[in-house]
Length: 426
Image 1 (cartoon, one colour):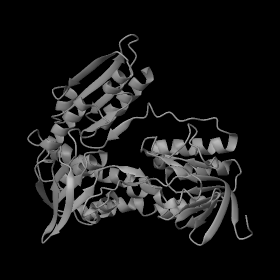
Image 2: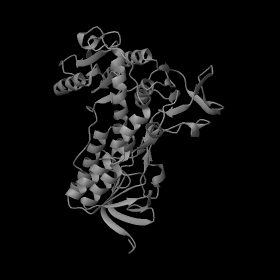
Image 3: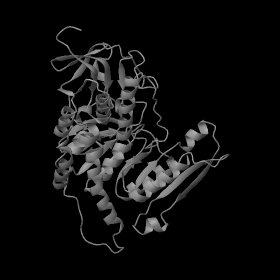
Image 4: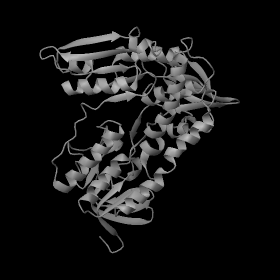
C-alpha cells in the first residue's frame, strides 16, 4: 500500500440495510470503518423500495376496503389524489440520506460518495479516492434484470414508478412477480387501467399455486388484467404512448403510457470490476461460502440483495450484514438460514407464506398432510367484504409438525397472529 491510500479495517460498499448493519457491527468492535455509495445514502428499502411502497400500499388498502364495503353500509366517493400522496411519501424518504450520513459520522465512520470499483484484492477506488482495507463488504443491493428486448430503454424501473408525479391512464407491467402485483394493486386503486404480462403460465412462482389462484381472482375482480404465457417481445414508441408487443405463437399488442419492469432483479455487482479484486462469480452472482465469504478472495464478504442466495427482504439484509461482520471480527462462526423467513405480497388482501411449499416437500420425499380451504364465506372475510380469501397449511404426516404454514390473510392482524402461532410449532 502506498502513502496515498487511506486504510481501514473494513470498507463497506452500499448504505442500505445490509451495509449499515455491517458497518455498525464493525464499529462496535472498535474497527476503523469506511462506507461508500454512489447513490443517495439509505439504500433501496428506505429510499426507493419497501418504505415508500408501503406508504402507497396503505393508500390503496383504504380504497380497496371502502370499495369492498360498497352497498354494505359504506357509500360516497373516495379516491387517491396522487400528487398529495407522493408529497406524503416524501416526508418518509427525503430525510433518509442526510439522516443516514449523519449517523455514520456520529459513530465515527468515514463516508464516501461515488462509484466503487476494485483496484486489487484489498483496494478500492471510490470517486477520486483510493481506499484499502483488511476486509471489504459488498452490500450493493440488486438491479432490474436485463430484458434483452428492443425498446428496453423505454421501460420504467420501480424507482421511477415510486417517483412519478402523476398516475398514467394505462400501465403495463412486465413480469408476474411481487413488484408487478404490488404496484399493479396501487396503480389500479389510483384509477389506472393495468395489465400484467407474464412469460409463463405461473405468476408468483415462489408461492403456493392454490393461494396464488385466489389472489389472481381477487385482482382480476378489481379490474387488473393478468395475461400469462405472454412473453414481451418489444416496446415501441407511438404517437400517443407506448406499444408492447407480446405473445408466443400469436402476437398481441398492448397500449400504455407507461411500461414498468417487474421481471425480477439480480445482484447489482456488474460495475465493481470484481475480476480485478479476484472475486469470482457463478450463475447466481458472487460465489460465496456458508459464511457469506467470497470463495476466491477471503477478504470479501457479501450481504443483502447482493447475495442472491438469500431472500430479497430488508430484515434478511440486516441479518446478513450483522452475520458477515461478526464472521470478519471473530472468524467464520455464523451461517445464515433462510428456510423460515416469511414472504409477503402487499396487495389487498395480503398473500403470505413461510416454510416449505407442497412441491418442495414432495421433492424432499416428505409425506405431508394438506389442510386448505377457501374462506370467503367465513365471518372474518364477510364482515369486511373480502370476496376472495383462503389458507393452506402443511403438516408432516409422521410427526404432525407444521412444515409450511402458508396463509392468505384477510387482514394484517390475522396474518401476524397466524404466522407467530404456526412458526412456533415448526
